[in-house]
Length: 102
Image (cartoon, rainbow, N blue to C red):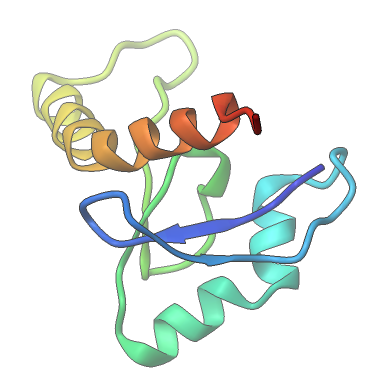
């Protein structure tokens, strides 16, 4: 099951999308549910993982290592800063995925 979750910077859930089949790529799911378009229209930047590369100018993702090369110090620093900004969201998602009723 692929559910897109929108949070605030502290990791508080703002919106869940309706579920799509688990085989649906994350970027396809975000486009299907118009999350990227809505955030772009509202001027809300998106911090996302590398699955969202190529999503558009409103979506910041980590940089992939080029084939046969390494990331520069600046690129690694950018990736660390993005990971630090996304950490509260990732912790919130981990809590949701491990939640059990009863």
